[in-house]
Length: 357
Image 1 (spheres, rainbow, N blue to C red):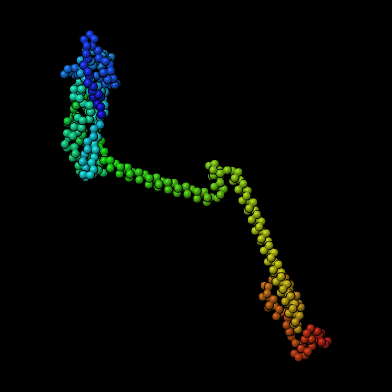
Image 2 (spheres, rainbow, N blue to C red; image 1 turned 60 degrees about the vertical axis):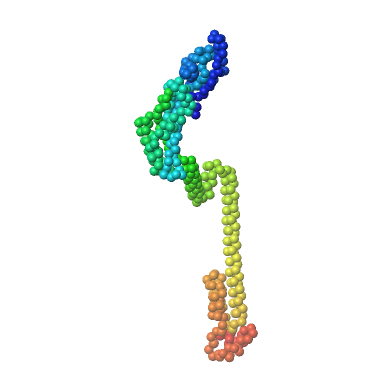
């Protein structure tokens, strides 16, 4: 850094008589804010009066062989020094900060201090015990090294204060930094940790959204539609049209179900009536081929069947044997007479005794 001496220029000798001697303005560089001219006249260094307009005919300007531009403003200067760790592969870096301000520009110009960090770095290197505070620590233990190095520098600067001729220098603080490799590694771990935390947070948000959506769906489509309308993600007219369409479809399904149920009931009634007709026809056929028929019992059986009090098929099979069959033989008649009194084909009455009996 160019501090405190900003620039140095050699000046050519001015020729001419004493009343006509005058240095050109271009020979002397422009003065930046906060700086002063220090002219070398013979073996001496003289400061051009501060605040005075530059005069090319000033005796010191005419006789000067060189000029130095010295910055007199206070500056904060940082100086670094490496510190060892327990491993030979890694080092710490201590950065010490100092406040510096020029008190005597002529001394600064004489010594030619172009970079003030050079004497300050030499000051830091003069503390031979400073490396001991970090030599027993690993690079991961940088916080402990920072504390010990800060205490060491505070004590060192109090006992041996920094000195630079022509300047006031004061120690401010000391910071310890890890190596670039460790910094890159820690940054990589930090970025990976942050990425995982971000991913975990996104999954938590997705889980919460899923539970919230599931809860909305469990409350029914009407609640979901209302939520969508409130967030202006669903149009009210679309919801109304869909509700009307669903209502019409539900009415059509109910009508179709009722129609199918009535059709099924009618089919069952028709089937039951057909079964009863077939049973009655079967009964009549059996009556036509029997010798004796109890018409009173036949009538009761038919009435019961038409009223649905007997199970179709089963009752018919049982009661038919009871209603239709050979009757008891009349007194004074034999089985042979009974057989002879009836026509084997049509069952007609053969004599008057059978009719009376």
